[in-house]
Each structure stands twice: as structure tokens, then as C-alpha cells.
Image (cartoon, rainbow over all chains, first blue to last red; front, side):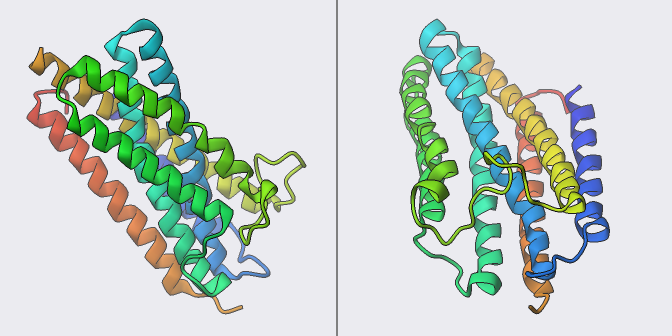
Length: 215
Length: 37
């Protein structure tokens, strides 16, 4: 099942890549550098999903004390950090030719960097506590508090004056994106989501095996 | 606006390296713990 999911994700990524470079048109204002968005936007949406699952797993553990919830949380947190890192790096690479700078302390960029650091801290904390129940409890608190940053990241472009553009998808108004661009974003979003669930399944299996070896 | 293909390829190459490395890391850890391949 997990293997099949991996293959499905790989095929979807190839289709997404084909759509990003072969189907989506050259953007009229930004030129081809806009193609980085087919990586940047799905990466951040996948990171939101990952951290929402960390929140769910953390709450689930605190309410039930079942280790399965803790395994869900850690299995989502690790790829979540990876996808947030990809969001920051790809955004920075896009920013240099578009904004003229690799980085600026804009509200969206800064809150995303904080999100990244919070979940890096979450993983470091897990590495520092040996006793599994205590580790799961401490991590759950960080997993719940860290999720408060997700709406801050998403709405930062509305709440503060920012260089980063407002939301063009997941915004309150209908998306102004042209259909081929929106379609390519959707394909890549699906591919990244499938890849995330493959990573989640693998990482959860590792956590389960580690628990069975330890106990 | 110039096309800046170098930036585009750099972004995709870095993503491919990072995702591929994580994929392999997970596969190795599963294997070392005796899980499914």
C-alpha cells in the first residue's frame, strides 16, 4: 500500500513537472521565473496540512494518551519542516530576480521563518527527551502552540503591509489566476500532497518500529 | 522581464535533491529497523 502510494506520488510529480514546464504558459509580467510558483505554492500548502496534522496528533495524544497519536504528530512534523524549508528556499530564489533581494523581513517571510524554527525546535525537543511518554507530552504542547502560527502566516499579508502579494488562492475572493496556471498549480498541489502522505506513512512506520524495538 | 532560467532550474534542482534525499533516508531507516521496503 505504502509502496503504491510512493509510485503514485512519483508519477504525479512527473506529471506536475511536465505541466509546469510544458503546459503552463510563460507568465506575461514575470516571465518564466514564475514557474517557481508551481513548487513554492504547493510546498507551503503541504506544510500547512502537515502542521494541521501535528496539531491533531498532539491534541489526540493529550486527550487519549495513545502513542498512535504521537506517532502521527512526529510523522507529519518531519516532512512539514522539509516542505516549509522548500517554501522558504524556493521563495528566496524567486525573490532575487523579482524583488531584487533574496530576503526581506516582510510579515509573510518572517512568520514563515518562525513557523520553520518552531517545528525544527519541536523535532529537537523530541530528540532531547528519552522517556517516550514525557517526550510525547512535551512535544504535544509545542505541537499545539506551534499551530497558532499557521493562521498568522496565512493572514499576515492581510494584517500587515507586506511586500509579499496577498493570497491568490485560499483567499476570500474568487482566484484571478488564469485557468492553465491554476490547473498546473492544482496538479502540483495534488502531487505534493501524495508525496507528503507517502512520507507520512513511511515516517509513521519508522516511529512504530522504533517503539516496538524500545518496548 | 528576463526569463531567469538559472533561478528556475536552481529552485527545482534543490527541491529534487532535498525530497530525494529525504525519500532515501526514510527507506534506509525502515530497512534498518526491519520494516517493509
